[in-house]
Image (cartoon, one colour):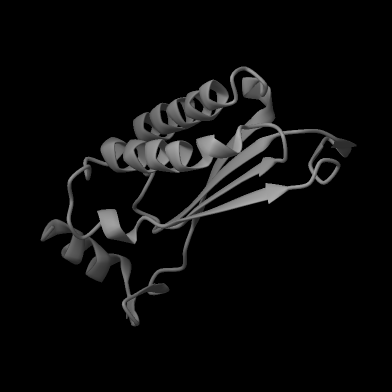
Length: 138
């Protein structure tokens, strides 16, 4: 389940990146009841993108910010409780790591669901059912 974490240069201390990724990963797994799942945990990957000042926008105007985007199968983030809980927690993780440099209104979290059957793990294209079966064994 890839995480793309993007932020504007200077909005966060560079040393906070690893801590933020670790906490976001832990939060997502915990909210899904998969905190120690041996199949799921290694499939949570992350990329960090730092964009130059002047390259982030809000409402068409230059702005600093941070963006948390998950790409998951459609069965993830399926309940309102998980959506509300994780998004609130993810926002707080980034806000606290910024030392207050970013307001919560400058932090955006979203989830993109993949097409069923398009999960490539270890070179195998897995359907949602196949992925759920593998996760249930971990």
